[in-house]
Amino acid sequence: MDLLIFFVTFTCDINWPEISLGILEAGQKPSDKADIVVRVYNMKLEEMLDDIKSGNAFGHILAGNSWPTTAPFFVRGPILFPNIY
Image (cartoon, rainbow, N blue to C red; front, side, top):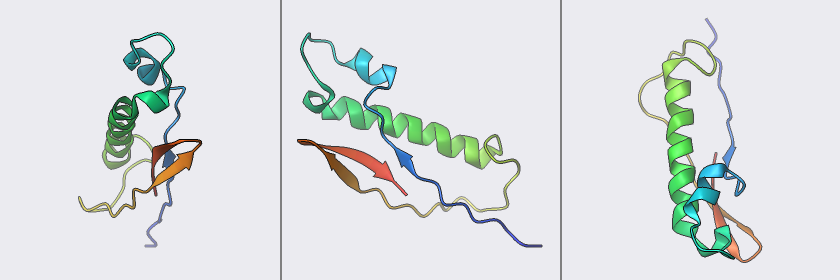
């Protein structure tokens, strides 16, 4: 039986509503609240990984609990955004 290998890229979207809700002061941009951006990104990443592990994303998977990842930040304008491969 051949096992499938997935390459999944998960990138932050500064237009996610949770990020907008976390910016409380008028005139602020996501670059002013990097802590909110990273916190929302990590929440959504955990949700995606839970979906993959539970079989809700791709169906049943045959894998252990070890998920190798690389999590660099990429630059968009003056700020860094999380990104995972």
